[in-house]
Image (cartoon, rainbow, N blue to C red):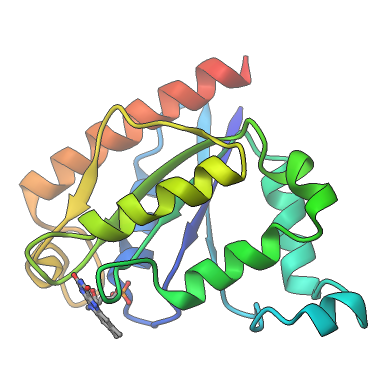
Length: 186
Ligand SMILES: Cc1cc2nc3c(=O)[nH]c(=O)nc-3n(C[C@H](O)[C@H](O)[C@H](O)COP(=O)(O)O)c2cc1C
């Protein structure tokens, strides 16, 4: 069984990105699971905390989950045409200390998807993740893109992905990424 850790980069209760991640987890094909995680509980990065009390418990837990997984799925909102600070902050914590980057990130399969109420569906925030992924030495899966635009129309009030065309694209994306992860998990 291959295991993917999906992280939504939004703290919002009614988040479209968390809803998108849940929808992806529901359609993971046989032999692959997508576990839904958020960035709740991760404080602002502070080197004095790292060098004093140490890496926060929520960060340690997520690091260990990623380290024991077969792949990572970043589900990113877009703020001001880039990565939301709260999400980047979480990945920055997860990349500490440097000596642990190899265990947590290096060589790990990663895919990016995202949703926004606008017309471009996180194009620029997804692109902004690429240098971060490269820096951490991850192995991106770039065969498909999933940009969920006009998210208010795509999801219903309960956060269910109801637009059939978006759903079809999401399923194709998830199947493609899961096949990639499963093939690398051996
Ligand atoms: C500070 C800020 C900047 C934003 N900038 C963008 C943007 O550049 N592009 C975009 O499509 N949406 C932008 N939005 C709208 C977000 O896409 C929208 O709030 C979305 O619902 C956030 O994702 P979530 O539903 O997962 O919380 C911005 C929202 C905030 C709060």
